[in-house]
Figure 1 (cartoon, rainbow, N blue to C red):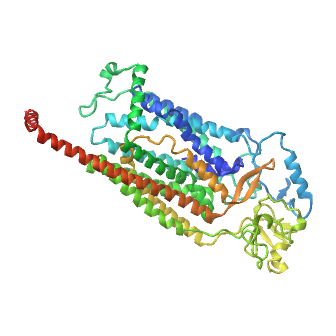
Figure 2 (figure 1 turned 90 degrees about the vertical axis):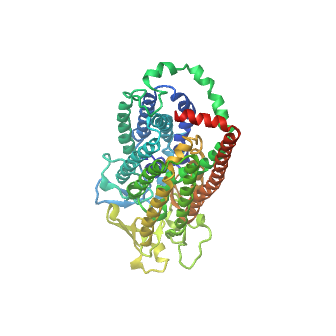
Figure 3 (figure 1 turned 60 degrees about the vertical axis):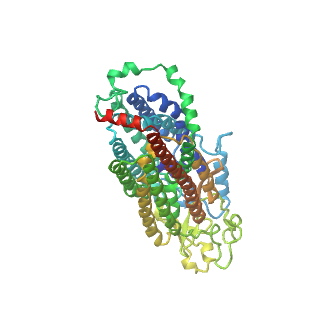
Length: 600
């Protein structure tokens, strides 16, 4: 989960759009897809604990590789209007008043190496590391689940799987907590003077120490791989468990690879010609796409919608939402053990919990905040003028002679309650103070709003959102925790019906939705070579409808198919019962003889 907590940090550090971040996120499933079928089928025939250990080892290596770009890239430089010298008391303005700003921009672009791509190509290293993580994870779930199912008592396997998922949630809690801590630390911690940083974690240019979480989790993953290499191929024999993999029988059941592969394609054909399985497969693909969008972009959605920092968002997700997931998984395993649900009962439980969780999403649409007032982006420079063309309104008569570059994003909050994308665009002609306490005075655009010259100052940073936003943020987290708990009540039946069915379902969702998020961007940043960088501000209303609308639509289609699947299962069970009754009526003597033999 450390990866999901760093999505926005990676986007800003590499100056890439959300669609590219979606490709990075989807690369985990790409790596999974490369080996999942082969590992799941062939791995069950060999030493499963060692195969799982090798996968965990590969995941650790991939995680460390994802942190590598930080150590080969130059220090993070954010666009700012305030340029300072080594003397902390001597601050000057470089973005206002004259053509000096344009000269600075020209020097910045000319400093790029000829032929260098617009955004940092080092994000490909992160992509490669995530692919390795996906390859390593491919066998952990299917082989681990089958190992438990083979050696647990018949009535306890569902309970053990539920416990496994519950303990597995400790990882996401740790991941989000670690991600929260890292997001609160500046990316170049230890290399720069923290007091010289003029932006805060709430700023859209802030990049936390995203790499630190990958280093810590990568090392811990490598340590976790060691014990798995010392586990036996089979557990000691239990009279109530299967003897198929008992060490004493190992030599009898060891098959060559060619013998194992002989049944591979017939098994695949049997699955793909099963209409009930295909129906459940399509339903699961749609549901998992909705889940992939939710798990990938929820931190980003909360940051943009409610104006929260990445650190606070990740921490609260880790301590509020994730424990609800753990509790739901544990109760799910208990329900399966307590009521001994079969295939039909499992399908009904999955359908009920899924639909109930969908209902919990409806209130999300009412939990919204308005876009902040940004001059030239969401509101006009003059109160009496309607905003017609956003792209043309970045410059106005009040700042036309300042030579302000369009790409600059160093927001200041005017005394009129309006945010300006930089002191230059606010028409300010003097500054006072240092670092985060800097104030700007004589801002002509604030005066044009109708304020007197004495009230035409601005402070560094965006204007705060309305106080109700924070309250809505906590309500959203509470409802989300409830929805997660209800949905996870069907987790164990979900795995028992089909283990690891969706091979490609996690790939398209983050990429496609990332591209949709880019459409809602109102103000793009610029990278060091003059190309388009990361988005600085989104239309949060459109973002909300896209995020919640797409997730709920995918879930609605999925659960419709799940209902059809449940009815098909019910019909199949009824037909099997009727067939059994017909056989008993047709061969009553044979049945009575078998019953007598069973009694003896």
